[in-house]
Amino acid sequence: MKLKKRKLKHAAIFFVCWFALLVFLVDGLLKFQTLVDYVGSYIVVEISLILLVILPTLAVYFFTKEK
Image (cartoon, rainbow, N blue to C red; front, side):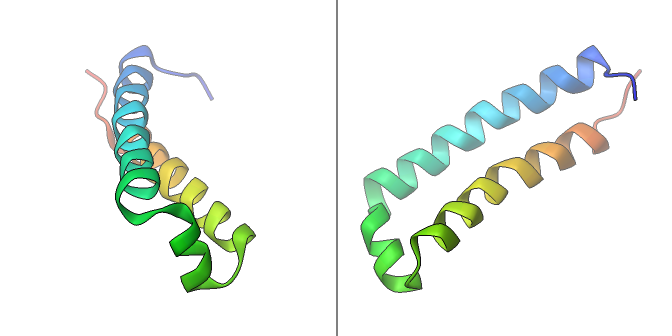
C-alpha cells in the first residue's frame, strides 16, 4: 500500500486536532478518574480513548479523495 502525501497530511491534521480536543475533554472537563470510576476499569477507558483517536483518523485517511 503506497501512502499518499495529501491523504496523510489531512489525516495527520485531523489526528492532532482530535487528540487535542479529547485531551482537553478527558483531562480538563470530565476528569479521567471520574471516567474510570464510572466504567469501573482503567484498561477499558484507556483502550476506548485510544480507539476514539485511531479509528476516526483512519477513516479520514481512507475517505479523503486524492486528486
